[in-house]
Amino acid sequence: MAEIQLRNVTKRFGSIVAVDDLSLDVQDGEFVVILGPSGAGKTTTLRLIAGLEGPDAGDVLIDGELATHVHPSERDVAFIFQQYSLYPHLSVFDNLAFPLRSPRRRSSENEVRARVEKVAAMLHMETKLANMATHLSGGEMQRVAIGRALVREPRVFLMDEPLSSLDAKLREELRIELKRLHRTIGATIVYVTHDQVEATTLADRIGILEHGRLVQIGTPREVYGDPSCLSAARRLGSPPINLLPRAFFETAAIPDDTSVVAIRPEDIVLDAPDMKSALELKVLEYSPLRHLLILDRNGTPVVATTSIERNFSPGQTVGVSLPARSLLYFRADGRRIRT
Image 1 (cartoon, one colour):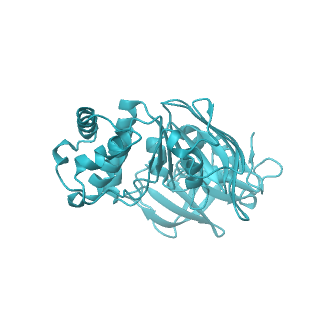
Image 2 (image 1 turned 60 degrees about the vertical axis):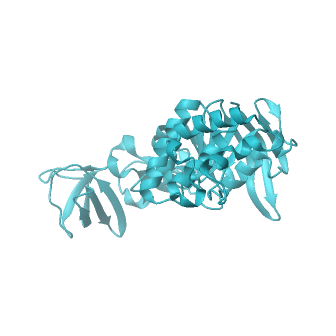
Image 3 (image 1 turned 45 degrees about the vertical axis):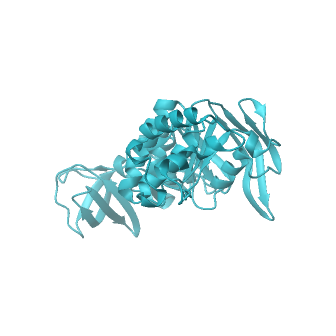
């Protein structure tokens, strides 16, 4: 396996800056997920690592060696795409064996069989080796696509939203499979997605990408609990973090230059009915199955989650407390104000 380093990498397509002065270190054997919306530059970042695109500025290093101008075939990375693109006229065995039979990596048939059978067992596909690719389910096809990369034993795996075309149940199954594979083989993996569940489930560290810039990188817990900017705070969390205007806090002392105050739904405390509350909000909706409350104060919606066994009715007034330790403050430009 290998470590990956991007040093102040910029990539433009005409007037569009797809990747903007990006620096990123991925350690040997680490699973890093790049999370961001469509158009954030996630796929372009993978293509720069793979050598399918060249940077306009900056450098790409793989295992400490400068790879900026190294041909993609010489970088020893495997790219797994969103669409699995198997060879329909070949069996599962031959699809898995294909990289090992290429002129560049040609191996003996005994070695091919041994490596294919090993990977098939890891993916629980050993009983499907004789099947044609067209006879597989979507999840099985994606397993074969992942296996075709695994059988090569590359230094780096690059994964471009490989589960996004699958249904929810298959995505969950393959997320578990990918995490198990990572623990088994200790691979260096860079994985991009717009799905926060995938990111928090799979990642050792998550990098939040916005408009081609890496705004924060850290463990899922660090990014969720201590976001460095407003875009990072909004990227993780379901239900999403509450964003409250400064005017919402009529008497509370908040830092100068605060434009937005944020608080996670689970950090909002519902006061007891007989308790005098500093904040009183009206119930708009209540979902007892999800323990989810949608509240309102002067036209500002507030979402709270609670495990309190109480009945809430639309129009009812409830008192809430917003613990100071749970409040996050942001300037108008989205930068965090730390207190």
